[in-house]
Image (tube, one colour):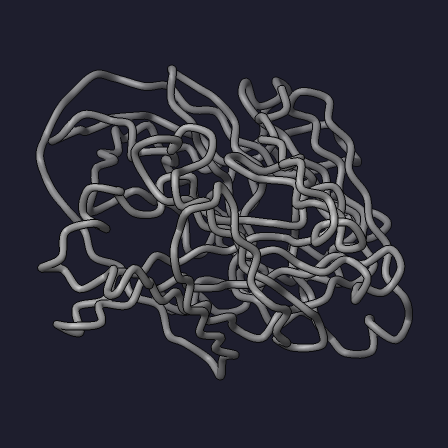
Length: 359
C-alpha cells in the first residue's frame, strides 16, 4: 500500500495520547446523529475530546467524507482571557499494514472561548475509507487517534451557543418550604420513560452550602433490558415576578450505573433568596424540566484504548429497528446515583453518591 492516501501520510508510530477502536461502524453510518464524540483524554495538562462526523460536517459542506475534529473541554476552570495554543495530529489506522495515517499539518491552532474546536472537514473520502484494500475498515471496525502538543498563551473572550430544540416534554414542579435537605418530584413521562427531579435546597457535593443542586433522574424500571437512553434536557428556575428565568442545558446517557444528571451548583443560594429576582415567592420556587425526545441505543461495541478501559452494550432487535443511535462511554463527571425507585420514597437516609471520574 502507498504511504499516502490523498493528503494523508502514513507512519509506523501510534498516536501518543489517544486511540479508540469502534466495532460495527456501519451503525454510525445508518444513524441520524451528525457528530459523535469519544471520551476525554489528557495532554499538556488540559482535557481534550476527539469527535468524528460519519457523514461529514455539513456546516463545512463536507460531502462523501468523514470529518474529524479535536475540542478543548473543561474550560470553565480556566482563568479569564484564557488561550491554549497547540499543534495536533488526528489519525486513522490502516489495520492491514500497521500504519497510522494523518494530515501533515504542523500549524499552531489557537483554542479560546470563541473557538474550542478545530478539525478537518474532508479528512478521508468515504469510498476510500470503505475500500477493504486500504485497511481502514476491517470487519466493520476502525481505529482513530490523536496527539496534542501544547504551547503557552493567554487571551480574553466569550461565546454564546444556541441549539435547535425539537419537540419536547415539559414538567413544572412547585416546591414550597425548602426546609428539608432533599426533595423528589412526582414522576412524569418523556418519550417512553418515566423521570423525576431531585432538588437539594442547601446544595449537594461541591455546591453544598452555596447553591441549590438539581438533577434529572430516570426510573430504571421503565428501561428495556440491556438498554441505555441518551437525552438532552433543560432545567429552568422560574422568575415569578420579572419573567427573567434562569436555565441550564444538559445531556447525558441514562442507565446503570449512572441514571441521574444535573448540577451541584445549579444556582447560588444568595441570589435565590433575593426577593427582587422573583425566584422565591411566598417561600415557593418553581422548577421546569424540559426533556427532548430521548434516544434508545442500538447494538454496537466500542473499545477505548486510552487508560485501557473497555466498554460494550447491546440492545434488542426492536430497538435496532427504531433506527436510533448514539455513542456513549460508561462514566460521567459530576454524576449522581439516585436512590432506587423502589425505596426512594420510604428510605429517609440520603444515599445518593457522587460518581468520581474513572481513571
